[in-house]
Image 1 (cartoon, rainbow, N blue to C red):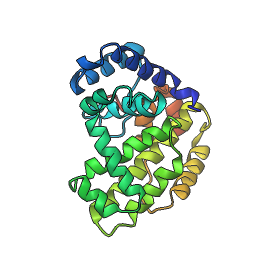
Image 2: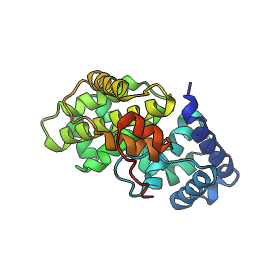
Image 3: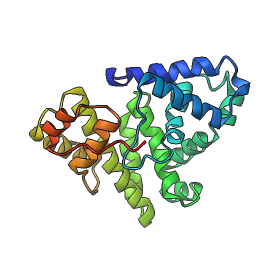
Image 4: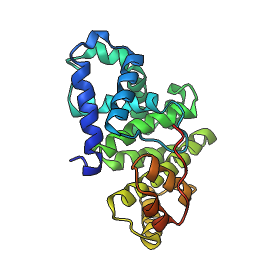
Length: 236
């Protein structure tokens, strides 16, 4: 079951699908992205993001995709819409499937040797995990698979995404109130890193603060109390 903290976003995404399905043939990728951005801003919903907020609504289409396909089961009913709008996400899902089957080098080739594409295939699975549409262990196994590659770019992707995932889960804990002070923050960070089980740079407090503010809209005074840092300004 989806966590309470994500229910407003899931509702907004479901509402977008209700609008889209009224005239499915009229939507292309750009029109779907505009509708997504307008609905989010209307409802005060913030996109998932890390350090890089470039093309954040383009990336957030993965949220619309997974809710439509795995939450609402619309992919067969609206097959032409999915192939027209979500061809990027469908490709990322294929790349992730290759990783899941233990073939990091093949996945990297399928991603046209792009670290960004490889990371975005992980982001799609991450989104499913966050919405309780996939098990976390699948994502963690993918990270371990990539980390064990001999190719530097692949290993770097595993490390970078692990840092983001750790920061995100810590920010989520702050937003939910389960991480209330610096001691529980440090303990939680260590526990997450042990669960992931690879060697990667742990996120600094300012990274967690950025996600806490820019994704979960946690109040500045709460972030400062838990992390002891100033909150970075939103840049999107």
